[in-house]
Image (cartoon, rainbow, N blue to C red; front, side):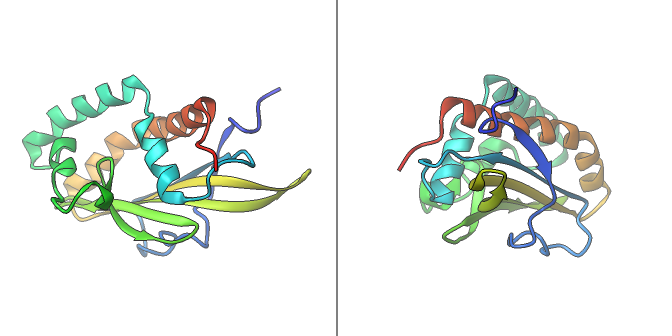
Length: 179
């Protein structure tokens, strides 16, 4: 029987998320959720920082391969994204710029010449058979500006889905930070 606190499942982009209606017709929109333990912290920024700080080793290798390929096309590399904001590490979560913060959600992302994207890390309470439970939902929406953006999303989306599911599963397995 699967551990419900580690099971990652695909969901619709939550209507209450700030990214749900960001783009009229997104070129990519997906969301994945995982149940949080009762004692997990409730700060979405700290949850996001934990999630992205504990990626599997193969994700770093995949990102390095991506960087080597995209640099030739003028697409920002992860190194460029990490140094993009000189105001300090509090303005970024890993390679992602922070756009908005609230008590239940942080929205991260980046704009580039080929596409804009946003990632929402949203804490939700959902009804379950046992009562209610907290879930962390990671949603991604992308708006492409041109053919390069559409080609990039076509190629990257299967890897994106693997990375997102892996990150949520790994964080749950390691154990979310507690209050």
